[in-house]
Image 1 (cartoon, rainbow, N blue to C red):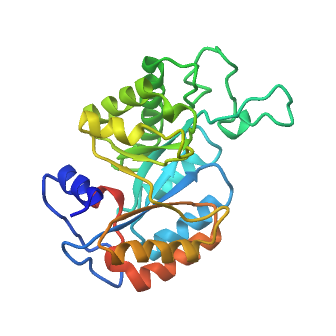
Image 2: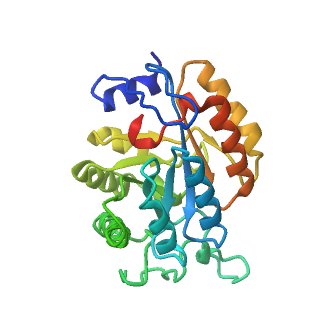
Length: 281
């Protein structure tokens, strides 16, 4: 058993669970899993059409919703009626070289609609992102407020709730041990699953997964990116190669990418027995 399998088995109390998750193929017990996380839901006008296609497919995935985005309510309303889709809070976190005195090179607006300036006080009505200058206590409050905000919308449409979170960008903040320990402790206390998106460079790695395991939270780390600068079909082939070696895969894509949805439809036909949403691995 490799390290990833050991961590998964440990998080499940030593039991390997495999539930029927794909429309045309039942999951095979005691086999590795392929879990798809689709990020950035709520931020783009294409999200809803692509999400509805996933619902029609009955594809078991995890949809990561950015709090306080233009289309979050429509996305959450659709998700509330899809039992085979898990819902994550996709928490914006400051990334390296985000700020620049030259407005043309400043990318703060990539993080949230009303980005905070250095030292600016957090306002839960306007803000959803964790910044490098935030204390661990403030970081936990932002996480808690973001999840509460999304859950408050979900309660209007049904009984589903947020099952965990991952980071949106965050290559700077996820290097901060104290903040990640605080977030992981909150997740452990509230029964939330963590996926470390691993948006950092190898020489300056994220510590979110490490701190999550340190406190005993249920946590996984991204194995493969599916899209944006890469071909989702080729990236899924990489996933299949990993599965063939008996290892599980966490693959992160983006809900706005039609090519990713098309590739996942094919994956469901050929590898549906391995595909599981994050809460069922």
